[in-house]
Length: 389
Image (cartoon, rainbow, N blue to C red):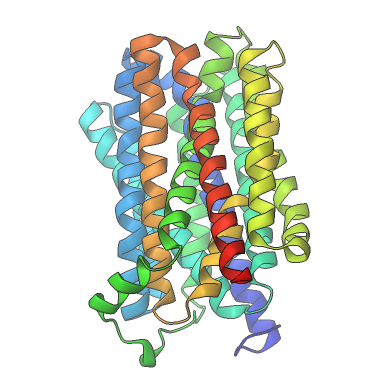
Protein backbone atom coordinates (compact mmCIF):
# COMPACT_ATOMS: atom_id res chain seq x y z
CA UNK A 1 0.00 0.00 0.00
CA UNK A 2 1.41 3.38 -1.03
CA UNK A 3 -0.58 5.84 1.02
CA UNK A 4 -0.81 7.74 4.28
CA UNK A 5 -3.56 5.44 5.59
CA UNK A 6 -2.85 2.21 7.39
CA UNK A 7 -3.29 -0.81 5.11
CA UNK A 8 -6.60 -1.97 6.60
CA UNK A 9 -8.21 1.46 6.33
CA UNK A 10 -6.88 1.86 2.80
CA UNK A 11 -8.60 -1.40 1.91
CA UNK A 12 -11.89 -0.09 3.34
CA UNK A 13 -11.64 3.07 1.22
CA UNK A 14 -10.74 1.01 -1.82
CA UNK A 15 -13.75 -1.26 -1.18
CA UNK A 16 -16.00 1.82 -0.92
CA UNK A 17 -14.73 3.12 -4.27
CA UNK A 18 -15.13 -0.28 -5.89
CA UNK A 19 -18.69 -0.53 -4.55
CA UNK A 20 -19.45 2.99 -5.82
CA UNK A 21 -18.27 1.98 -9.28
CA UNK A 22 -20.39 -1.16 -9.16
CA UNK A 23 -23.45 1.02 -8.42
CA UNK A 24 -22.33 3.39 -11.17
CA UNK A 25 -22.26 0.50 -13.65
CA UNK A 26 -25.67 -0.82 -12.64
CA UNK A 27 -27.40 2.56 -12.62
CA UNK A 28 -25.89 3.90 -15.82
CA UNK A 29 -26.65 0.80 -17.84
CA UNK A 30 -30.19 -0.02 -16.84
CA UNK A 31 -31.29 2.65 -19.32
CA UNK A 32 -30.16 0.78 -22.44
CA UNK A 33 -32.12 -2.35 -21.54
CA UNK A 34 -35.22 -0.42 -20.50
CA UNK A 35 -35.16 1.97 -23.47
CA UNK A 36 -37.51 -0.03 -25.77
CA UNK A 37 -40.27 -0.52 -23.13
CA UNK A 38 -39.88 3.10 -21.98
CA UNK A 39 -40.38 4.36 -25.55
CA UNK A 40 -43.36 2.02 -25.99
CA UNK A 41 -45.06 3.00 -22.72
CA UNK A 42 -44.69 6.73 -23.33
CA UNK A 43 -45.37 6.37 -27.08
CA UNK A 44 -42.39 8.52 -28.07
CA UNK A 45 -39.83 8.29 -30.90
CA UNK A 46 -36.05 7.83 -30.88
CA UNK A 47 -35.39 11.58 -30.89
CA UNK A 48 -37.62 12.22 -27.88
CA UNK A 49 -36.00 9.33 -26.04
CA UNK A 50 -32.62 10.82 -26.83
CA UNK A 51 -33.77 14.17 -25.43
CA UNK A 52 -34.76 12.49 -22.14
CA UNK A 53 -31.40 10.70 -21.94
CA UNK A 54 -29.72 14.04 -22.63
CA UNK A 55 -30.70 15.05 -19.10
CA UNK A 56 -28.49 12.37 -17.53
CA UNK A 57 -25.47 13.30 -19.61
CA UNK A 58 -25.98 17.01 -18.97
CA UNK A 59 -26.07 16.29 -15.25
CA UNK A 60 -22.95 14.16 -15.52
CA UNK A 61 -21.21 16.95 -17.44
CA UNK A 62 -21.97 19.58 -14.79
CA UNK A 63 -21.27 17.28 -11.82
CA UNK A 64 -17.82 16.29 -13.01
CA UNK A 65 -16.48 19.81 -12.56
CA UNK A 66 -18.72 20.64 -9.60
CA UNK A 67 -17.66 17.54 -7.66
CA UNK A 68 -13.98 18.35 -8.26
CA UNK A 69 -14.43 21.82 -6.77
CA UNK A 70 -16.41 20.39 -3.83
CA UNK A 71 -13.74 17.76 -3.21
CA UNK A 72 -10.87 20.29 -3.24
CA UNK A 73 -12.75 22.61 -0.89
CA UNK A 74 -14.74 20.31 1.43
CA UNK A 75 -13.23 16.87 0.91
CA UNK A 76 -14.06 13.72 -1.00
CA UNK A 77 -16.52 12.43 1.60
CA UNK A 78 -18.87 15.35 0.95
CA UNK A 79 -18.59 14.75 -2.79
CA UNK A 80 -19.41 11.04 -2.41
CA UNK A 81 -22.41 11.63 -0.13
CA UNK A 82 -23.65 14.35 -2.49
CA UNK A 83 -23.44 11.76 -5.28
CA UNK A 84 -25.45 9.21 -3.31
CA UNK A 85 -28.26 11.63 -2.48
CA UNK A 86 -28.53 12.75 -6.11
CA UNK A 87 -28.72 9.13 -7.25
CA UNK A 88 -31.49 8.39 -4.76
CA UNK A 89 -33.58 11.40 -5.83
CA UNK A 90 -32.98 10.77 -9.54
CA UNK A 91 -33.93 7.08 -9.41
CA UNK A 92 -37.11 7.81 -7.45
CA UNK A 93 -38.14 10.51 -9.93
CA UNK A 94 -37.32 8.57 -13.10
CA UNK A 95 -39.11 5.45 -11.91
CA UNK A 96 -42.24 7.35 -10.82
CA UNK A 97 -42.93 10.20 -13.26
CA UNK A 98 -44.31 10.18 -16.80
CA UNK A 99 -43.98 13.64 -18.34
CA UNK A 100 -40.94 13.90 -20.62
CA UNK A 101 -39.79 17.12 -18.95
CA UNK A 102 -39.93 15.54 -15.48
CA UNK A 103 -38.10 12.43 -16.69
CA UNK A 104 -35.44 14.74 -18.14
CA UNK A 105 -35.06 16.51 -14.79
CA UNK A 106 -34.93 13.20 -12.92
CA UNK A 107 -32.16 11.90 -15.17
CA UNK A 108 -30.37 15.24 -14.83
CA UNK A 109 -30.25 14.77 -11.04
CA UNK A 110 -29.25 11.14 -11.51
CA UNK A 111 -26.46 12.32 -13.81
CA UNK A 112 -25.25 14.70 -11.11
CA UNK A 113 -24.88 11.66 -8.87
CA UNK A 114 -23.05 9.56 -11.46
CA UNK A 115 -20.63 12.35 -12.32
CA UNK A 116 -19.86 12.95 -8.65
CA UNK A 117 -19.38 9.21 -8.07
CA UNK A 118 -16.94 9.03 -10.97
CA UNK A 119 -14.88 12.00 -9.79
CA UNK A 120 -14.94 11.01 -6.11
CA UNK A 121 -13.96 7.39 -6.65
CA UNK A 122 -11.18 8.11 -9.13
CA UNK A 123 -9.76 10.92 -7.00
CA UNK A 124 -9.80 8.74 -3.89
CA UNK A 125 -7.84 5.97 -5.63
CA UNK A 126 -5.36 8.50 -7.02
CA UNK A 127 -4.88 9.89 -3.50
CA UNK A 128 -4.35 6.45 -1.95
CA UNK A 129 -2.13 4.81 -4.57
CA UNK A 130 0.78 6.70 -6.10
CA UNK A 131 2.89 4.27 -8.11
CA UNK A 132 0.16 1.75 -8.92
CA UNK A 133 -2.79 4.01 -9.65
CA UNK A 134 -3.02 2.79 -13.26
CA UNK A 135 -3.47 -0.76 -12.00
CA UNK A 136 -6.01 0.11 -9.29
CA UNK A 137 -8.02 2.44 -11.51
CA UNK A 138 -8.37 -0.38 -14.04
CA UNK A 139 -9.32 -2.82 -11.28
CA UNK A 140 -11.93 -0.36 -10.04
CA UNK A 141 -13.21 -0.25 -13.60
CA UNK A 142 -13.73 -4.01 -13.34
CA UNK A 143 -16.43 -3.30 -10.75
CA UNK A 144 -18.09 -0.88 -13.16
CA UNK A 145 -17.99 -3.65 -15.74
CA UNK A 146 -19.48 -6.13 -13.29
CA UNK A 147 -22.39 -3.80 -12.50
CA UNK A 148 -22.81 -3.02 -16.19
CA UNK A 149 -22.90 -6.73 -17.02
CA UNK A 150 -25.43 -7.59 -14.33
CA UNK A 151 -27.74 -4.67 -15.20
CA UNK A 152 -28.93 -5.85 -18.66
CA UNK A 153 -29.13 -9.50 -17.56
CA UNK A 154 -31.20 -8.52 -14.54
CA UNK A 155 -33.36 -6.14 -16.57
CA UNK A 156 -33.81 -8.60 -19.44
CA UNK A 157 -34.86 -11.36 -17.05
CA UNK A 158 -37.43 -9.14 -15.32
CA UNK A 159 -38.74 -7.77 -18.62
CA UNK A 160 -39.36 -11.32 -19.78
CA UNK A 161 -41.39 -11.77 -16.58
CA UNK A 162 -43.48 -8.73 -17.65
CA UNK A 163 -42.06 -6.59 -14.85
CA UNK A 164 -42.33 -2.84 -15.49
CA UNK A 165 -39.15 -0.97 -16.44
CA UNK A 166 -39.98 1.40 -13.56
CA UNK A 167 -39.88 -1.41 -11.01
CA UNK A 168 -36.52 -2.53 -12.40
CA UNK A 169 -35.05 0.89 -11.66
CA UNK A 170 -36.41 0.90 -8.11
CA UNK A 171 -34.33 -2.15 -7.20
CA UNK A 172 -31.27 0.08 -7.62
CA UNK A 173 -32.30 2.09 -4.54
CA UNK A 174 -31.17 -0.76 -2.28
CA UNK A 175 -27.59 -0.40 -3.52
CA UNK A 176 -27.60 3.37 -3.09
CA UNK A 177 -28.91 3.18 0.48
CA UNK A 178 -26.28 0.56 1.34
CA UNK A 179 -23.52 2.82 0.04
CA UNK A 180 -24.77 5.84 2.03
CA UNK A 181 -24.69 3.79 5.24
CA UNK A 182 -21.19 2.52 4.41
CA UNK A 183 -19.70 5.88 3.42
CA UNK A 184 -21.06 7.77 6.43
CA UNK A 185 -18.61 5.94 8.70
CA UNK A 186 -15.51 6.35 6.53
CA UNK A 187 -12.93 9.15 6.47
CA UNK A 188 -11.95 9.94 2.89
CA UNK A 189 -8.76 11.80 1.91
CA UNK A 190 -8.94 15.50 2.73
CA UNK A 191 -7.92 18.32 0.39
CA UNK A 192 -4.29 19.41 0.55
CA UNK A 193 -4.10 22.78 2.29
CA UNK A 194 -0.95 23.61 0.30
CA UNK A 195 -2.99 23.37 -2.90
CA UNK A 196 -5.52 26.09 -2.18
CA UNK A 197 -7.83 26.76 -5.07
CA UNK A 198 -6.52 29.36 -7.48
CA UNK A 199 -8.77 29.51 -10.51
CA UNK A 200 -6.25 31.41 -12.61
CA UNK A 201 -3.59 28.77 -12.02
CA UNK A 202 -6.07 25.94 -12.58
CA UNK A 203 -7.13 27.41 -15.93
CA UNK A 204 -3.50 27.70 -16.98
CA UNK A 205 -2.57 24.21 -15.78
CA UNK A 206 -5.67 22.53 -17.20
CA UNK A 207 -4.92 23.57 -20.78
CA UNK A 208 -1.13 23.56 -21.03
CA UNK A 209 1.14 21.12 -22.85
CA UNK A 210 -0.71 18.05 -24.16
CA UNK A 211 -3.81 18.39 -21.97
CA UNK A 212 -6.15 19.46 -24.83
CA UNK A 213 -5.37 16.18 -26.62
CA UNK A 214 -6.28 14.19 -23.53
CA UNK A 215 -9.59 16.09 -23.38
CA UNK A 216 -10.44 15.36 -27.02
CA UNK A 217 -9.48 11.70 -26.62
CA UNK A 218 -11.55 11.09 -23.50
CA UNK A 219 -14.51 12.97 -25.01
CA UNK A 220 -14.49 10.78 -28.13
CA UNK A 221 -13.94 7.58 -26.15
CA UNK A 222 -16.89 8.26 -23.84
CA UNK A 223 -19.05 9.15 -26.85
CA UNK A 224 -18.29 5.72 -28.35
CA UNK A 225 -18.79 3.69 -25.18
CA UNK A 226 -21.93 5.44 -23.94
CA UNK A 227 -23.35 5.51 -27.46
CA UNK A 228 -22.90 1.74 -27.70
CA UNK A 229 -24.27 1.14 -24.21
CA UNK A 230 -27.35 3.28 -24.85
CA UNK A 231 -28.29 2.11 -28.35
CA UNK A 232 -26.90 -1.42 -28.79
CA UNK A 233 -30.08 -3.13 -27.57
CA UNK A 234 -32.34 -1.00 -29.77
CA UNK A 235 -30.01 -1.50 -32.77
CA UNK A 236 -29.90 -5.27 -32.36
CA UNK A 237 -33.67 -5.50 -31.96
CA UNK A 238 -34.71 -3.07 -34.72
CA UNK A 239 -31.95 -3.59 -37.33
CA UNK A 240 -30.67 -7.11 -36.65
CA UNK A 241 -34.11 -8.41 -35.53
CA UNK A 242 -32.81 -10.08 -32.38
CA UNK A 243 -35.11 -10.93 -29.49
CA UNK A 244 -35.37 -8.96 -26.25
CA UNK A 245 -33.47 -11.67 -24.41
CA UNK A 246 -30.67 -12.05 -26.96
CA UNK A 247 -30.13 -8.32 -27.43
CA UNK A 248 -29.86 -7.78 -23.69
CA UNK A 249 -27.43 -10.68 -23.48
CA UNK A 250 -25.31 -8.96 -26.13
CA UNK A 251 -25.24 -5.82 -24.01
CA UNK A 252 -24.26 -7.93 -21.01
CA UNK A 253 -21.44 -9.45 -23.07
CA UNK A 254 -20.30 -5.93 -24.00
CA UNK A 255 -19.91 -4.99 -20.34
CA UNK A 256 -18.53 -8.38 -19.35
CA UNK A 257 -15.75 -7.86 -21.88
CA UNK A 258 -15.14 -4.36 -20.53
CA UNK A 259 -14.79 -5.95 -17.11
CA UNK A 260 -12.44 -8.64 -18.40
CA UNK A 261 -10.45 -6.11 -20.40
CA UNK A 262 -9.87 -3.94 -17.35
CA UNK A 263 -8.96 -6.91 -15.21
CA UNK A 264 -6.27 -7.97 -17.70
CA UNK A 265 -5.56 -4.49 -19.03
CA UNK A 266 -4.43 -3.09 -15.69
CA UNK A 267 -1.41 -5.38 -15.77
CA UNK A 268 -0.87 -4.72 -19.51
CA UNK A 269 -0.84 -0.96 -18.94
CA UNK A 270 1.51 -1.35 -15.97
CA UNK A 271 3.98 -3.16 -18.23
CA UNK A 272 3.72 -1.32 -21.57
CA UNK A 273 2.79 2.22 -20.58
CA UNK A 274 -0.20 4.51 -20.93
CA UNK A 275 -0.07 5.86 -24.48
CA UNK A 276 1.09 2.65 -26.19
CA UNK A 277 -1.81 0.84 -24.54
CA UNK A 278 -4.54 3.29 -25.55
CA UNK A 279 -3.17 3.53 -29.09
CA UNK A 280 -3.53 -0.23 -29.60
CA UNK A 281 -6.94 -0.20 -27.89
CA UNK A 282 -8.17 2.56 -30.23
CA UNK A 283 -7.04 0.70 -33.35
CA UNK A 284 -8.70 -2.55 -32.31
CA UNK A 285 -11.92 -0.71 -31.42
CA UNK A 286 -12.16 0.74 -34.94
CA UNK A 287 -11.64 -2.68 -36.51
CA UNK A 288 -14.18 -4.38 -34.24
CA UNK A 289 -16.85 -1.72 -34.81
CA UNK A 290 -16.36 -1.73 -38.58
CA UNK A 291 -16.79 -5.51 -38.77
CA UNK A 292 -19.84 -5.46 -36.47
CA UNK A 293 -21.64 -2.70 -38.37
CA UNK A 294 -20.82 -3.48 -42.00
CA UNK A 295 -20.92 -7.29 -41.99
CA UNK A 296 -23.31 -9.91 -40.65
CA UNK A 297 -20.94 -10.54 -37.73
CA UNK A 298 -22.86 -8.26 -35.36
CA UNK A 299 -21.35 -10.11 -32.39
CA UNK A 300 -18.20 -8.03 -32.97
CA UNK A 301 -20.11 -5.04 -31.57
CA UNK A 302 -20.07 -6.25 -27.96
CA UNK A 303 -16.45 -7.39 -28.45
CA UNK A 304 -15.57 -3.71 -28.89
CA UNK A 305 -15.99 -3.43 -25.13
CA UNK A 306 -12.82 -5.48 -24.57
CA UNK A 307 -10.72 -2.99 -26.51
CA UNK A 308 -12.40 0.12 -25.11
CA UNK A 309 -12.05 -1.15 -21.55
CA UNK A 310 -8.70 0.34 -20.55
CA UNK A 311 -9.24 3.79 -22.07
CA UNK A 312 -10.87 5.74 -19.24
CA UNK A 313 -8.80 4.55 -16.26
CA UNK A 314 -5.56 4.71 -18.27
CA UNK A 315 -6.20 8.28 -19.44
CA UNK A 316 -7.03 9.22 -15.84
CA UNK A 317 -3.77 7.71 -14.61
CA UNK A 318 -1.76 9.43 -17.35
CA UNK A 319 -3.23 12.85 -16.53
CA UNK A 320 -2.74 12.44 -12.77
CA UNK A 321 0.94 11.66 -13.44
CA UNK A 322 1.43 15.08 -15.01
CA UNK A 323 0.00 17.17 -12.13
CA UNK A 324 0.08 16.96 -8.35
CA UNK A 325 -1.71 20.09 -7.10
CA UNK A 326 -5.47 20.66 -7.32
CA UNK A 327 -5.69 17.13 -8.75
CA UNK A 328 -9.38 16.77 -7.79
CA UNK A 329 -10.30 19.89 -9.72
CA UNK A 330 -8.09 18.92 -12.67
CA UNK A 331 -9.72 15.49 -12.83
CA UNK A 332 -13.03 17.33 -12.61
CA UNK A 333 -12.13 19.27 -15.76
CA UNK A 334 -11.12 16.01 -17.48
CA UNK A 335 -14.35 14.25 -16.50
CA UNK A 336 -16.42 17.32 -17.39
CA UNK A 337 -15.09 17.18 -20.93
CA UNK A 338 -15.64 13.42 -20.90
CA UNK A 339 -19.22 14.29 -20.06
CA UNK A 340 -19.48 16.22 -23.33
CA UNK A 341 -18.85 12.94 -25.14
CA UNK A 342 -21.36 11.17 -22.93
CA UNK A 343 -23.88 13.92 -23.60
CA UNK A 344 -23.63 14.36 -27.34
CA UNK A 345 -22.57 10.84 -28.40
CA UNK A 346 -25.88 9.08 -27.59
CA UNK A 347 -27.86 12.22 -28.44
CA UNK A 348 -26.22 12.39 -31.88
CA UNK A 349 -27.00 8.72 -32.45
CA UNK A 350 -30.61 9.34 -31.42
CA UNK A 351 -31.15 12.15 -33.89
CA UNK A 352 -29.07 10.52 -36.61
CA UNK A 353 -31.35 7.50 -36.24
CA UNK A 354 -34.47 9.66 -36.26
CA UNK A 355 -33.42 11.50 -39.44
CA UNK A 356 -31.61 8.80 -41.40
CA UNK A 357 -32.51 5.49 -39.78
CA UNK A 358 -30.97 3.51 -36.95
CA UNK A 359 -28.38 1.83 -39.20
CA UNK A 360 -26.80 5.16 -40.12
CA UNK A 361 -27.32 6.72 -36.70
CA UNK A 362 -25.62 3.83 -34.95
CA UNK A 363 -22.70 4.06 -37.42
CA UNK A 364 -21.73 7.36 -35.78
CA UNK A 365 -20.00 5.20 -33.15
CA UNK A 366 -17.50 4.13 -35.82
CA UNK A 367 -16.91 7.72 -36.93
CA UNK A 368 -16.13 8.74 -33.35
CA UNK A 369 -13.83 5.73 -32.95
CA UNK A 370 -11.87 6.70 -36.08
CA UNK A 371 -11.43 10.25 -34.78
CA UNK A 372 -10.36 8.78 -31.43
CA UNK A 373 -7.64 6.74 -33.12
CA UNK A 374 -6.37 9.77 -35.03
CA UNK A 375 -6.03 11.95 -31.93
CA UNK A 376 -4.41 9.19 -29.86
CA UNK A 377 -1.86 8.73 -32.62
CA UNK A 378 -1.13 12.48 -32.70
CA UNK A 379 -0.68 12.57 -28.91
CA UNK A 380 1.55 9.49 -29.02
CA UNK A 381 3.83 11.01 -31.67
CA UNK A 382 4.00 14.42 -29.99
CA UNK A 383 4.85 12.88 -26.63
CA UNK A 384 7.49 10.63 -28.20
CA UNK A 385 9.04 13.59 -30.03
CA UNK A 386 9.20 15.57 -26.77
CA UNK A 387 10.91 12.70 -24.99
CA UNK A 388 13.49 12.39 -27.77
CA UNK A 389 14.21 16.11 -27.97
